[in-house]
Image (cartoon, rainbow, N blue to C red; front, side, top):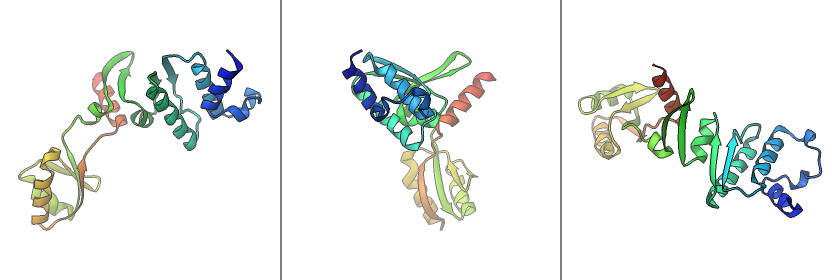
Length: 192
């Protein structure tokens, strides 16, 4: 590699100031960024990273997200292996769920997150809100709100019904599971 290429890659991962320091003096986060720099040296079309946010502080994690999105915007395929599913949800376009060496599902993040049709309703009093909806939509009181088995298109009718029943409505939105919750359900079901 030429010195110019090394300098460019170190600049990209924000290690230029520390280029002359010995690696043994690097923090865990700096070593992570150095590993990414090494992966980028040959300017590959495919970048495979294992837990790239490991050891990074909050600002470092945000910088890593920006770097990975930038690589994808340049047309590079970025393959990320991680157990930090919140990070995967924020960075990736597509995911593959692998459990015990078996591919369970491959889909876009949106496809996985939009699996169910349920709304989360925050209204008071909860018992009055639940009673108003039960005849038309299955619902249950959970975690200080209502989970209503209904699609987005039914939101106006649900809000009207709640207001007519005298309930104060504070929020109605999709009841989305996190990628972590979906992963745990999928892997638990595959073990059964």
